[in-house]
Image (cartoon, rainbow, N blue to C red; front, side, top):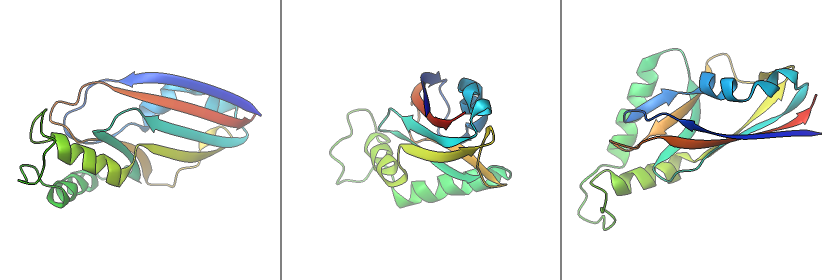
Length: 141
């Protein structure tokens, strides 16, 4: 069993949903030597999230952003945690709903994603800043 772990920083993204699969693969080239294993992706933040979804049609990402914004709207009178602005508490709720980690199977030197799947960073803040990601790859060479 072999383990590799790397932490890296994603540059700031505008609010929205962004495919980050290429950035992840660039950061952990050891995947290419794995015969089988798992890649765990962990986002070290409470106002952005990770998810898997379609990587071909950008309107999927736009529709997801629209839906999640309607599901958890800003400027609600019952939000008390608004120290960093009206997007603060909604961003935390969205992260809780969507999650901050993914585990993806690896085989024959590649992520075993479906044909249309990509890894998304969901930036829930208007000015979220750089985001730290921890990649943990384990399996057999």
